[in-house]
Length: 359
Image (cartoon, rainbow, N blue to C red; front, top):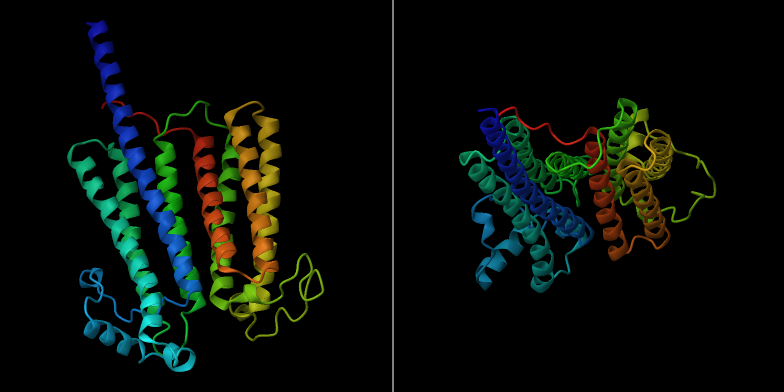
């Protein structure tokens, strides 16, 4: 009788592990699309394409203009907004098509990732391949994706009436929410993976989690830098405006506006954020080698520190080269690589999700 129960338990465990593998690889596919979505979003920003579609049509907007008359109609809508009137009055229809396709591709990817997440989620839930404790996490990520679509349109609206580009506040919010969704998806996927090492102690877990938070904050600051085009000024390093700590950082009133609206102050804070991330990643590597030498945790901490160092170098190159599109997009892409690895490392310090008592 005991042998039969043990055999059943082994079968149940194998089934759970197989289901976890299927769900994990689905989430990895979602991560790949999310990564592509953020990069295309960055390109859309750098090509001034984000305001080319002036309406939000979640369903009908999948279909692009199919005739010359439809193209003219879209172009006429764009001609009604300040960006065209103040920046692009000499734009031709062919030029408009170029920026239109960037924004259309960005929105298409956004819709696509929703389907890629929602449909398999329904299938896995209906066939009971998802453990009960994971359902709220996955549904929560799906709801955040829906919120992200609304935030994206909220961002675009800010540039349609009184501005020639979107609000840096809304742009940074849009980017950070995308990064948070990316992080949450990575954490769940990593929690479903087999772990070769036991969990670390709580101080190491907290430090790894703190580093994830710092990278998210740095991404938010990067969104502000992009929104203010702050990277196009003060293109020297390590000095900024000829000094380690430049002057006139807090000339706007009230004080808090400098943190979000002054290109000089925002770029300086972004630099300081990079130094903080670098030092915390270094300290985490040292601490991990002290507390868990020779483990996978230690090796991951080295890899993470190397990624942070590479990202810092790419950021400096982006600044010194006056933000060329290819280097800037590499900087944005590598930020997601650092964030994803940091999130996976944090989940790794906590170990895999515990197996359910009964499958």
